Amino acid sequence: MDEIQELIRKYGLYEDQEHVIIPFRSDDGSMKRCFLLKRRFLRIMFSEDHFHDYPLAEIIEATVLYPNMHLRESILLVHREPEDQDAEDIINIRGEGEKENTD
Image 1: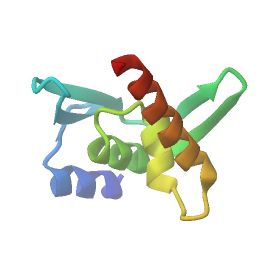
Image 2 (image 1 turned 180 degrees about the vertical axis):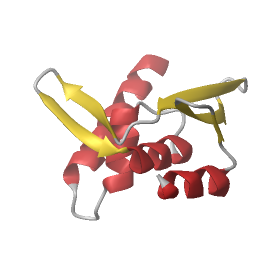
Image 3 (image 1 turned 45 degrees about the horizontal axis):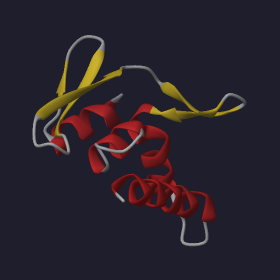
């Protein structure tokens, strides 16, 4: 949990007894907060039969770096390697969906 304390100091986050609290500005400019349970690992569901458990430190990094994205997308970006196509596919799908909605 020392790594978590370091991230809290590094990013200026807050915490209570059960949560790490990440303040962020939403797309519309309002201030919001994300509450992450202080657990060793958190499970991210990609689909009904596809999930992974990620360490809390990685979840914090993904949330701080990409606060307005779905966590399942932002965690892939944090883990992305140049040859990793899964994260690139997620970005492309998200971009195409947003483009369709604005037309």
